[in-house]
Length: 169
Figure (cartoon, rainbow, N blue to C red):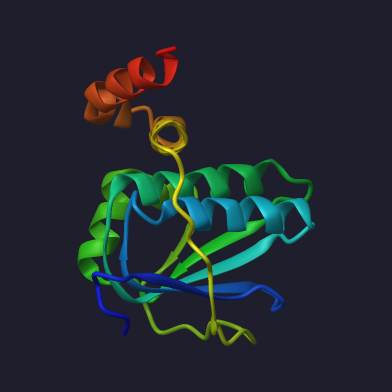
């Protein structure tokens, strides 16, 4: 497992389903690269994804909001795509359920086979400007509210702060 101070997303972008393995902590600090990866693959017509959480130390609401956004995009496709959260720890599973993502995504807490992919290529995670980062965090939290309206009260202060930040000239 990667040092949790230097988390990494390992991917096999050519497998079906596409496999993404999280090594370390998934957070607002590294969510932009996974957001962009999902956008690019979905634009290429990829519709099946598995995220392997076995080595995921922890995750925050921004990362979960990015995952929710990918799930929402995949659900709109005809036919709908799929996003499976695999080998997720009890603590991370609790976070997923508390935010209602288990109703949007497929959650497999067991040891199900991940498919043919053997993730090994690390996604490059480049820094974004402060404003672009704020936009991403805002979008992620809006995705959580879209996923489950009960999340609005959980994140109302974050949403208000970020909207103010993003709307400043």
